[in-house]
Every structure is written in structure tokens, then in C-alpha cells.
Image 1 (cartoon, rainbow, N blue to C red):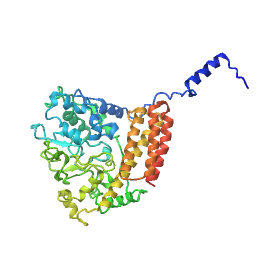
Image 2: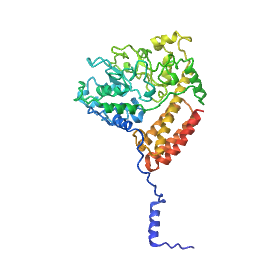
Image 3: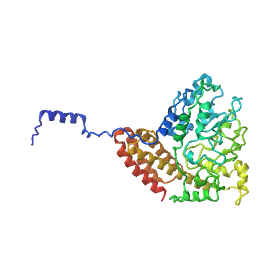
Length: 453
């Protein structure tokens, strides 16, 4: 038998390790403070967007445009919020109990009350609208007649620009009372704040349109892309699956009356709550709404301005129905070669599969952009790398959701799940985030390679 003699100090250390039941891990070197990069104006805009209440009721732009939820909200997300969240201020502030929000329609259908046509008759003159995401605005809102903001193209007061949009949002949504008195119920954004908010919003999402056709690897999505470009006539209003029309030179974003308001059995109408028809653009409105981008559609349901359709397949199928066919926009389509849109069930699924795939590819692009900043230990538009780590997980979840919802790319979903697991670890162990981000990028690129050539 060999007898092991251990010096007294070493024995204490050895005994401590035995008591701990495992080896002590080697020390992890600190990575230093993240680098401050980018335009300070954009960083200021981010802070204003998510934190500034403008001396109002506690809401910020980020109350409805959540960073962790695709810059929008819907019933499933709303259900996760605490009772004291500023979104529910109409339920906690007696001065906003009447004619400011409809809590039932908000919680059940994700609808926000808007006074698009003025505030003279708050009890009867209002619209209930979903919350649009604010991605890709730099390539989505310009038209020959000026910018189109909000669902109906007239969401901003005054000059209708994106820069002015925040002014309208503060007056509509941030007020302490329905009297909406500037300087008392809120303060208006300053010129400098409007500049910063616009600069930040223009960084959100894509900075350019896709170039279709794409070399997709799913045969169903490829068929859907062909239908989108041809028989479905989708590309006429959604060039490259974006928000701009292709049937007229430099048309940009256009307004159309597509008959969404004429859909029977709209969920909000079935609730029994007062839900006046939405007249769209102008005051009084002409029934038209502006064209949204489709690249970001699949992970931002429900669909249309009134959240009337829950699934991307249902949104595609809408254009087969009578509400669209009988609308002014539908009549224009019917009078072109090919006539009324008439996609079969499998074709509807194929077009939806195409939209799901391009949405997942956009998720992957966004995630890799964030992972790159994490790997370089840099702020991105003023966002700390550790906050990016959390948001990466949310965006990966979106990609997984849109692909699995259409039964698409199981192997790519597997890679995405591996990347998610890696970044979940990074969220728990910040000192490892740089090396883990690099590993996650490999998994994300592998997933991308399974989806597109």
C-alpha cells in the first residue's frame, strides 16, 4: 500500500475540494467594458423610445412596441404582463377609465383605441386598431404623395413624417387625461428628441428590400414564391415582398381599400363591444389603408389593421374571398388578365410557406447582426451586449415558431434550437457571452444554409 503524505496547507485545500464535491473551475478573465460604437443620436433615440414618458401617464413608445416582442404586442404577450404595466393605465387611472382604451378589446384581441378623426366625440368617434411593428420603415413608408405612417398612412400629425409620428403618439397615448392638454397632461417632444427618435427608428429592421426570386431549398416555399410573383398577383403591391408597389414606376407605398372592413364575423364585432367601422385614410376617411411589408409578417400576427385574422395562412386566403373581390382593390385585380385571385388550399399554404421562410431568414439576419455585436463586445444602437443576448433568444424563438408552424425545415429548426441553448447559457453567464456568441453564429449560419442556397 502506498501512503500519501500531504503538507498541512495542501491538505486543507484538498479537503475543501472533497467537501465541495467537485473541482474548482479556472478563473474566467473579465472582458472589460463594452465598446461604445455608432451614432450617439441613435443611442439617444433608443433611450427615448423605451424609457421616456414625456411627463405623461407612464407609457413610453416601448409600451406598445416591445423590444422583446417584435416591436408590437398581441393578446398572448399582453397576457404575460403584470397588472401595473403602463399598457393597462386605463384600468388603474380613474381619469382614463372612459374613452381612452377598451380593456376588453385590448386584452382579448390586442386592439388599441385611436382617435384618427379627432377628439370631438370620444364616446363614438374612434377606431380600434392593432399595433403595427416598426421594422424596415426606411424602405416601407415613402410614397409619391409623402410618407405613409401608421395603418392608414396618416398616423403622424402635421407633415405626416416619421419624425412627427412621436408627437401624435404622445398626444394620443401618453396623456394623463382625455383632455390632452400639452404642458399639463404631457409634454411634447423637443426638436432634438424628435430627431433622435426618427434616427433610431430608421435603424430598426431591414435597410433594403429583398431581391426576388430567392434560391430557396423548400419545394413548397419555392412554389409559394412563384405563386406570389405570378398567379397570386401579390407582387404588384408587395414588390420583393416589401411594402412598395411594382406596377407603377417609383410608386413607393400606396393606399388601398381591400375590403378588410367588410369581413363578416370580425372578432372585435363578435365581442358585443362598440367597434365603429374604421374609415382609413383622411378625415373623413376614404376607406384606404397603406400597404404593409410582408417580410416581417409571419411572426407578427394577428393580421390587418383590425387584427381580424390570426394566421398567416388565413391572411393569404383573405384575397380569395368576397370581401376582397368586391372591394375597389379587388375589382382592379379582377379587371386584369387572369381575373379574380383564386388560389387553391395547397397554394394558399405554399404562399404562406414562402412568407414564413423569408421571415425566418430575416430573423436569422437580425440575430447574426446582434451576435456580431456581442462577439465584438460592442453596443448596438445604444443597446448593451447583455441586453442583446436576451433579445437574441426571443428572435430565435420567432424563427423556430414561424418554421414549425408551417412544418418547414426541421433540420434548420434543430440548429436554431442549439443556437438558442447556447445563448440561454450566455444569458446566465455574462463573462462567457463573447465566445458563446461566436459558437451561436456557426449554428445560425448552418440553419440559414439549410433554408437558402
